[in-house]
Amino acid sequence: MRIGIFGGSFDPVHLGHLIAAETAREQAGLDRVLFVPAARPPHKLDRTLAPAADRRVMLDLATGGHSAFAVSSIELDRDGLSYTVETLRALSSRFPADRLVLLLGPDAVRGLPTWHEPAEIARLAELVTVERESLDDASRLLSDDVLIGLLGRAAVEQLVESRVRMPAVGIRATSIRGAVRAGRSIRYLVPASVAAYITHHGLYAEPDARQA
Image (cartoon, rainbow, N blue to C red):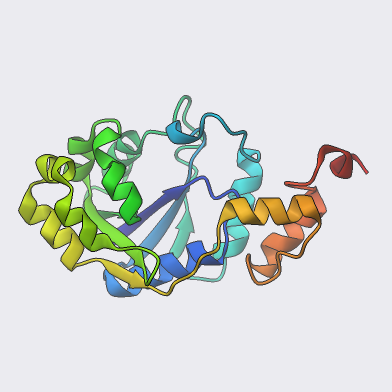
């Protein structure tokens, strides 16, 4: 079985995430997509995330009803920073007969050499990049000498050739949080169940609004 690993802070999960996951499921031939919310992403230590429990519930709400989607709390249950290599090691032990496929945007792939144990990440999982049409250009990876030095030219060429192409969805979690703080609608940016959860629990609102 091919299991897609889709990591992120999901703060909050939005329709862009779901479209990316569904597109990757179809185009990369995935049997399952596992959403893995991070506890403390190393690249977001300067920002306070919504509580892990809330981000997990919102993912459950967003993915519920899709038989190929599941949520794993493997990083939320582990102490310390959320390093992808540790997650892949744990999932490899949990699913020894399955093929792990790590889903990454082109920018994330470009930054892979700076990650913790990047060569081990590439060994543990097949890398698949998800390109948003007209917003991303995965072909630029072919001129990234650092990435080529890490993976090898043939692997980077295969990564670009097999890239997943999804519609140009420019929804950003940052904009959603800003809209909530400003009292604007987030309808059609997140699933209705997630929007209701955010409102009910006062997530992303100004402090005085949460206490009202």
